[in-house]
Each structure stands twice: as structure tokens, then as C-alpha cells.
Image (cartoon, rainbow, N blue to C red; front, side, top):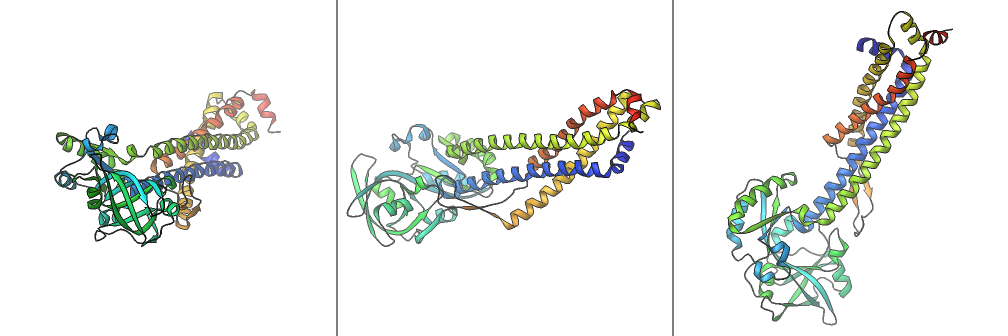
Length: 403
């Protein structure tokens, strides 16, 4: 039957081309839409990783739920030992310490509430590839009392590189402490809200401000983002006896999870729309082809073929069309994705950001399979009702189509 179906496909050239065009366009559309959505996931995730959170963060057990209220109770007092354990794991690129705090920054005229990070400048520079220095330069280990300001902080206090500022914070014992710093640079990340309150200083200066030798967190940078889950699971086992908890960048960025859920919903709706469009387009082409061939099918039934044989012949033809069209659609989709990615699509800044980005089309195996299945299923579904109708036409009426 499939041999006869294949011959019929090549015999009905015009209708075959019309059907294939509908399938190819639908399959390619799903590939492009799915690849674009996955590129958003990837670029947003990498922006979060390389501007704020790193791939993993390690805390004292309980810090993530209660440490912000009582940070002094959840300090890592001997970070070097834990750091060496983490650095020894396969796939780990760097491990750096951070000490978080909040306080006031003063430019000599006014104050502004800030959230601060004491960090290791040279290591953080390698991690922070998604942070753009808009004025001055990056903080370095040699800048003992240098400070990096978020763009919003610098604008609010009208500060420039080289200006002196004072930080006023509460130590972990509750006393007030202050230190003078010199602005080395102004940075911009993907988040305007973060830039409006964030400052960064060397870890030693932050420890002096807070009166401690400990740190809040160890930030882990990995060689490959896709290994985050596996390495996090291994570190949880390794560090369980040390009283540490491990959080992935996804767990640390609630914004990312909500964004992914939103785009998954949008892509699901888009997929349904494309499926319906392919279904209607293919159904129209299949209907035209089948009813123009009613006389042919009547002759088959007059020669002794059962109506069920006619029905399955039509379905078989469309199964082959679905496979051929889906395969060609996958090839066209991949080709278009490569061309578009090579050119790049400039995108406007996302919400809560001033920095635009260049979008690409990722080639995702799961999306390719989804697109192929969608094209195949839509083609088969579109053939069932016309095939059922034609197979039930009385033989005499079908034969009249030959006159």
C-alpha cells in the first residue's frame, strides 16, 4: 500500500507541492519560534550568572531562610577550607567569597541607602562578563579602598570616577562604622533596580567595615552552565557534613523562573496557533486533491477494492507527505536558524533594563522533534475526515466524476 501511496504522491505534483509547502512553513515556523524562545532563556540566564549570582552559591545551613535577619549567626568563619573542597570538584572554574551588607553612602552632601558586596575583585572581574563598565575602570585587587557604583547610585549622587565617598554601616555587633573610598568605576548590569542600589568594594574593606573575618557566601563559577544541576548535587553530598547548603542560580533568581514560565505559556499558545494553521492549510489541500480524485477511488472500488482500502490508502499518502514535509521543514528551519543567527537580530532592552541584546535562533533537539511531530500529526489528522467521506461515496456516484 505504501508503494502505491508513494506513486500517487509523485503523480499529483501540484497538490503534493501545495501540501508540502504548508507543512514545511509550519514546521520551520515552530523551529524558529522555539529556537528564539530558548535563546531568551539562555541569554537571560547567562546575564544573571555573569552579573550577580554565579552558577552556584554556598552558605551556612539556614542562611538562605533566616540569614538576612541575623547575618552574624550564619557567617562562614573558615572559607578557605570549604573553598578548597569546592575547587577540587570536576567542572568548577572558580570559587570566590562574598560578604553582603547594607548601609548608607554619602557624597559629602547627601546620603543614599545601598546594598553592598564585599568581593574579590580580580576573580569577580572574570565572572562578571555581563557587567558593563560605563565610566572609569573595573575594581582590582590593588584597590584596597576602591569602590564600584551601580549606574543608578552614581546618577543619584552625581558621582564620577575619582570622587571620594563615605560608607556608613552597622557592624555585626550593632555599632556604627564608616570608611572612606574612592570611586574607581561605574557599572551597569541587566537590571535597573539592582544598579539603583548596588555598590561593590574589596572583601577586606567590607570585613573591616563589619568587624568580621568571615564571609556570607562562596560563589562558584562553572565551566559549563548545563552542568549546574549535577555539580550542585555532588557538592550537597560533599558539604553536608560541614553544615553548608548549596543553591543554584535558578533558585537564587526568582525572576528567571517566572520569565521562563511566561515564555513557555506564550510558546505553547504559538505552537497551537501554528498547528491549527498547518491543519487548515493541509486540510484544504488534501480536500481538493481527494475530491478531484473521487472518480479514481470509485474505479478502485468498482474493481473490487473495499472502502476501507481506499480510506487507508489516502491516510498512507498523507503519512508519507507528513514525513517528507516534516523532514524538509526541519532542514529548512535549521538552515534559516543558522542564517538568522549568523546575522543576529538586534532586540530592544527587556523590562527593567537599559541594555539591548542581539537575539539568535538556537537549534534545540527537543524543538526539532516537536516540530516534526506537529507537521506529521497535523497532516494525518487533516486527511481523516476527507478520506472517510470519500470512502463512503456510493460507487456509481464516484464513477460519475470520470465523465
